[in-house]
Length: 152
Image 1: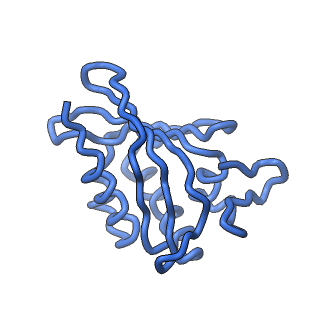
Image 2: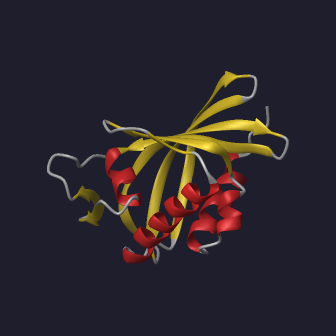
Image 3: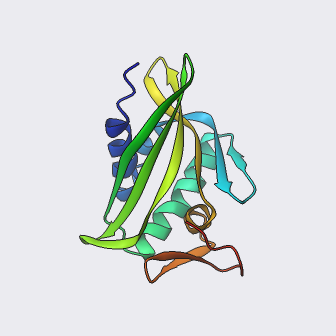
């Protein structure tokens, strides 16, 4: 099982930083389930929903001047013959400086004819709220605009 998450992660980052929807779209298989820890999950069913989700993410990155993202794999767990869970430490940078404290996320990957694609993401509620425009980054931490909703 050759997942090659590094290449998938690089394409994901390049799509976001370059605001390139086609590249971003190429790393996902729809539907995509997004599960914030301690929050309500949601599913991106259509390409249009994925496009809107990406636009929010790109906007948050531009506001906070995110110029690079690294995802360092901690583990790869085979869930089934064509599904794996990759746990990675995510680090966001702004012009070489740490933008937010590193945090863990899980990427649920599905094997498709085109290779491994993201079919699900589990991350902190703070990170997901930030990507949706409901939080900010202050003092290298995600800060929700809703009281009690801050988390890595």
